Length: 415
Image (cartoon, rainbow, N blue to C red):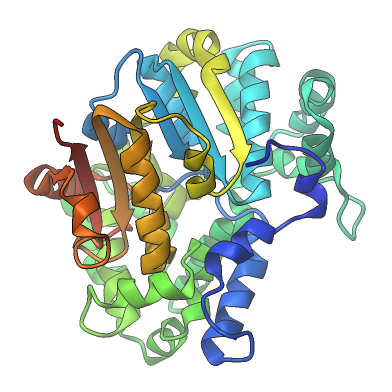
């Protein structure tokens, strides 16, 4: 386990490689894994793509809880702070995500106001953001994080200048969404026009008449049949294999179903994930729902609780192995288990079970619909947990991010 240090700069991607590599380097699968690891070592998620409101409800999150979570883009961590947990330990293999989380925490502490916080992370096209970084954030960041944000590209522009435009157009996810928009426009469809829909029925009509037919095009079916086509969603080869089992055998059909839920499953005014996918921005305050950390009414509470977060560049298994028995109340695994071998899953659940306090809860998502644990994790471990099947199905249906096949909740049984 390491905190953010010089390793962020000089060991970029090491932990990602350890997690992803499962096949020989010169095999077809091995080449695909190495390409994914290379891409995943940079910024992938400018914002998290899991619904923190569902997370908090499933965890029954409250004051005093001790959480261990994967950091990703950090929106989840900051949302959890609105429930005043005692501590959040956030780990991530990706050093770019660690740097983003470090800056978000610094922004809560040191930007002058909530309006400044929203301007930095919620609005697009403000050329003062990099100046705000220089004045308020940079002096309060560690050397490695400053190195990440102040590194210059081949045009001489610092990475922090992404916030002068639209930061959410960056990263692998931003690129993936941009490619999706370009592909739709090549077929005469502008996905952003769904934002003109006045209600869910109009959203569905737009999807069925404009977006759905694109997934039947031969070129799109050919492109999405390549595992590398979903690297922009942060989906490694192993997870691609799990994802395709939830459709009719073609990835185009799976993506069509997931996009249908995103486009039609919730009113646009309630779903900021749809705003990012279709409008490519967050709504303005009062225009529609926002991530919890950008809502004005949560600002004072977030500032009061920000010091309860600890960030680590670490593998989840290694991190838990260093914690005391019974010291964690809530575990948030995102979709990380889709990446794992059986040996890794058993190692993870050995440490989860050891460190779980009485009544602990574990939540995670999967590309396919069913939970992946039965038959892969030792019965002696799983027998200590209760799978909340009906609740999991309900949470999955209400997850606004819409891209996962399943949401899963496990509760520690009484001794």
